[in-house]
Length: 124
Image 1 (cartoon, rainbow, N blue to C red):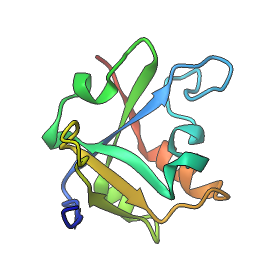
Image 2: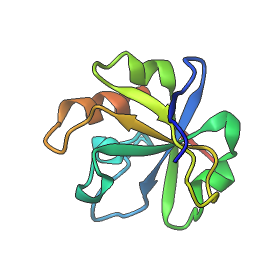
Image 3: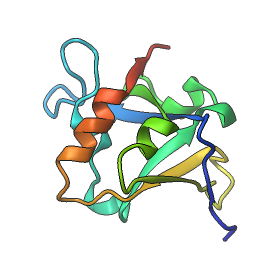
Image 4: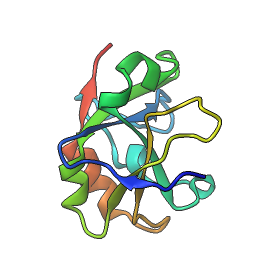
């Protein structure tokens, strides 16, 4: 496994949110809910994102019928301590833009909300 390196401060990151009306991932005004940036049990403590300069919105969203796409500046992520973003291309070669936001916990309710407020929706 290659060594993970910090994502440059000037980068932007993509994060998908489910298009699920029951478990709201988007507010009525089109902004992300904290659920988009909340860890799930199977995330192993790392929030998956894509580095925008290494991909495009269509590739990052994968299936626009199932997901919404949001972007956030890496500097906005790093302003929230103790978060860090590491470039982590998938070992099977399917996603060279993959990165991981580390420093969140499953119990955290504050940081996901801060990230959601700093993000903006990407329209395809």
